[in-house]
Image (tube, rainbow, N blue to C red; front, side, top):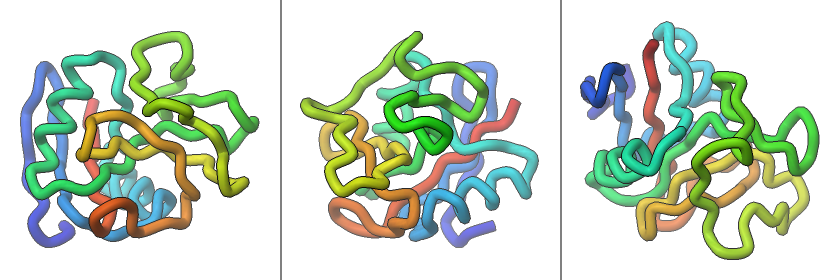
Length: 135
């Protein structure tokens, strides 16, 4: 496990929360998959608030949300489309501002989402955290 990771139960699922993991989206996803999970898919406001407060050290958290397959078509890795359910994009997001902003983070500063480049390891106040979700 990444140092400082902790197992957390929320609702009917188990999660592994790794503050300030500092991995890019691909490495964060591979880490979760290696443990039998997936990066978190945020499907409800309650889950969003929980993830926002779970990152007690602040910063941002990788989610499984991405538009890697088709620009502007945001999907969770559980197969659902972001726009067909709960969403909490920050104002003007997703905007693909730097071309290639294809992965979504939950920004703990405000609890909303932002699209950033999947290769980033830092965003906002420091290294990006990750939360793995297990079925």
